[in-house]
Image (tube, rainbow, N blue to C red):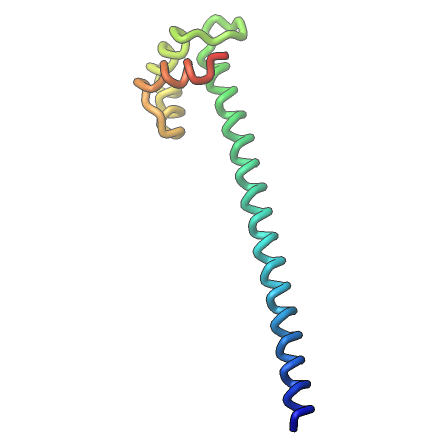
Amino acid sequence: FTYVFMVSFAMIRVITAVFLKETLQVANRDHDAVVAEQVKKGKELVDRCRAAFKFADMSRDGFLTLAELQDAAKLPDMKAWLAANELDASEVPGVFYLLDV
């Protein structure tokens, strides 16, 4: 009886260990997928910002002034872009100074 109990106990421990190992691997893959998705979203946001700033550069000199950005913020396309990025035209100066380097 003791032998059967010990073998059964050992088998249950092995099965539990395998199950736990698989669960941790799946969780790790999920974490990696979330990180990859966040990196992708970040790159997409940078691309959208570049396009919006290029659109706002009215002088086409490659430099964006606060006046250009504020003028562009009055245009329907830029208003839509700001709204899509949860920004308001009143926040344009803050964004400009935040990004101005």
